[in-house]
Length: 516
Image (spheres, rainbow, N blue to C red):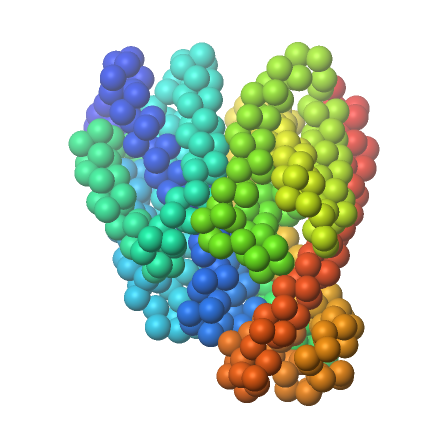
């Protein structure tokens, strides 16, 4: 075992000192990470097409995103521990294989239910892509200056992927159909696996962490039950027995998870770090950034296509102000760090996100394309500022020897924020549409007022295809009704996201103002 560790260490030292080998290692690992961003954002663009072709309800669409992010968020920390124990290169290859197989299953899915089940497996593959890839980069560069440069390159690749993803999704959907948003992963995974086999040496942690199976199971269950409550709430009713029991069950599972983690010698989540108030503030900033800004990579395409009537490719192009701001602003954040401390930068970023969401709320219902583009640019600017600074702020609030656990908590907070943010804001949208649909229907002369109960239920669930099957004679006014309902419902979503970002800004400022 010691001989293997020494050989792996020597191999990675060669990677760090040999510029070409180090560059190849960095690009290969970064592409593995970029695959997770590419898939998330490309799927966000093709969601409305999936809804039409698979006759999917709005709740089923939520599960297409949420099942993926749920498995991703729940398994990131254990995936890192497994990679350290059994070999980062080996687990990276397993993640690539699992991600490719799940992508094929997604592309072949004949129904929305099978699609989101395959997406859950894809999220599992993504966790085993991202965690070992990050560990490979961290292990491959030992010099502080080289490591900083490596993470800068990694960040640039991730940002560029975020910019290109909506365009790729629009082009692929327009030319080949939504299934190719998943099939395109297969040749990329094959090329990535070949690069891993030729460019990356095996490495392990000589003193790996033990796996906290109880913690993994409790955390995943709590996240699933809460997500289930949020997705089912608008349809079942927020005060219904099913919704309340799921919500209480989710909170209870989280409570048991905390009790178990406090008693374990090697917990999945080290709760001792949360004794630091500045650490709580930095993690809050990461969660709020993901839940109110990064989540918009999935919600804005729905708005652009369903409320503004853009085709898939046009929606991808329209996403550019948001995506470019997310790419550029991390560079601005690095310059601001010379003049502002972490507390002020994070507070500023959250306030910009809040302002961008409020501007989106104003522009969403009847605003010009220019107003929407400016609002998305402002929203993306706040998100980009946070994207570059949240991880650094979290790492700056813990001792160096706790950096590994802190990094894992940071990444888990990010994807937990995306999951709960998407589920919550989608629930807000569904609730708003249920409220505005009767009013909007009465403003369209070709439709009866009030709507037939079953028709109203189908439309509120986002199931336009079933509504058209029942009432084909109203095809044109029903499409008009749904577009107006989305346009009236989305401002409530943006206001909710702005409120979240504003409250988080206050918490972050109060927690971190004395940290420096």
